[in-house]
Every structure is written in structure tokens, then in C-alpha cells.
Amino acid sequence: MSSRKIHIYTDGSSKGNPGPGGYAIFIEIVGTSHREVISEGFRYTTNNRMELLAVIVGLEQIIKKKQNIIVFTDSKYIVNAIQKNWIYQWKKNNFRKKKNVDLWIRFLDIFNQHFIVFQWIKGHHFHCINNYCDQLSVAASKGKNLQIDYVYEKQNFKKIN
Image (cartoon, rainbow, N blue to C red; front, side, top):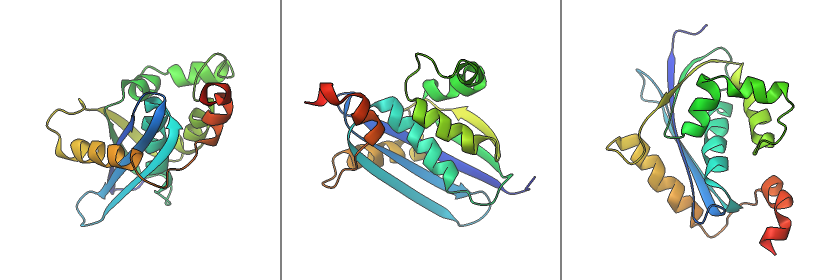
């Protein structure tokens, strides 16, 4: 186990839910000057997908394994799935009748590579980094070159057309 601590702040958004969406990530290695900011927008997605994708992409940036990480998120969807162990029951049931299966599987692939604690923070409530991530995720959702959330769009193709 590493003695360094990493904080990952995340946020996701979508306009219309579903609609154009985006996520943002702020990563810091505590006690150093290292900071990294990532954001990306998608043309048709949901808020929960963007919240979860932000966590996944943030964790995927941590190359060295067995790191001590605190993920700060305003998503009860994610925090409850982990802290209440819902994710393991979903997996046991092969994610039957669950949404965002592709992302939850991707999440589980990286989750066990580190020592991760999830910390819920109230969104839009005077937390400067969370507010910064919120602004970046909204801006990303309004970008000109929005990515395609292929899995979501394929599952919802009839709804798009």
C-alpha cells in the first residue's frame, strides 16, 4: 500500500437527462503540486452515466496500483452503490434489470486495484472544487465536438430517431 494520498473530485451533468452531457475530474496528489483536470462532453447520455464515467476515467488515470484514493462525488447513485454494497449484489445477479451495466463492469475492473474511499459531498453547496467540476462538466456538454456514448445510444436508438 502506498503512503501517498490521492484525491479525485468528479462531477457529471446532462441537459435533458437524456440529452447532451459531460463530466469533469480534478485529481490532486496530496502534499504535492500535482494537479490534473479532465473534462469531456457527449451528444446523448444521462446524468448518472456521466457521474459514473467521471469516477471511472479519474481512477483510470492512476497508473500505479494499490494507491490510497478518496473519490469526492455528489452522486448518491455511486456512493450508495459502493457503501451499501449494492454493486456486489448487482454483479451476483449479472446486473439483471440494472442500467449502465457497461460502466459498472468497467468500474469494477479498476475499483479493486486501489484502496478507495468514497466521500459524498453536497452538490452546488460551496465546495469550490466540486463547483469547478460542475462548471467544467456543463461546459463540456455544450462543446462543439461532442463524443458519442455508443453503448447508451445503441440501447436507446429508437428513442433518438
